Length: 155
Image (cartoon, rainbow, N blue to C red; front, top):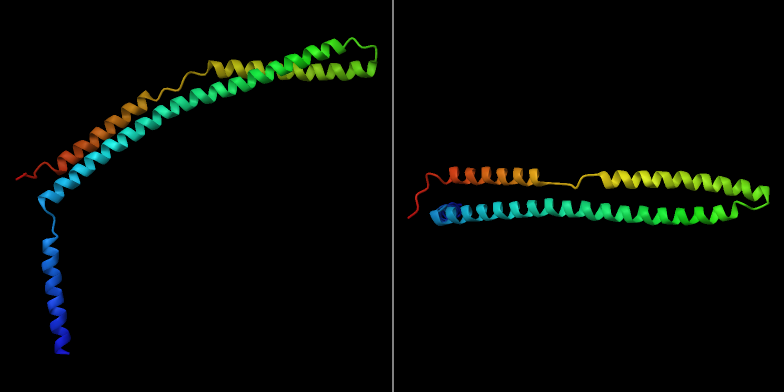
């Protein structure tokens, strides 16, 4: 029993001495500060890249939607032209169906033109204000790092 106590005390003493060696040093503190500043810079760059990518995505998405709508509008116009040629048929049943189809296509054409006009009128996304806010917040965090490290004297 005494041997276990001795071993435990020796082990405890060893751990205490070992932990003293691994204490926080000025070098470790400065290394952590450098890492924190590096991470702040990286976060800032990533957030600004995200905002810029969002602007680009919005432009590309708008162009894709406009292209699809214009393609469908061209198809509708072509179908209307074809139906207008058939409209003069002597068959009353055909004329009724053609008139209904023409009416439906004209409504679709009007909706497409309106949607295109609304989409074209949308302003380009601008995330400059968000980028400015990001820069301000990062500067604030950098100031907090300065405050934390203010009373640390280097050797």
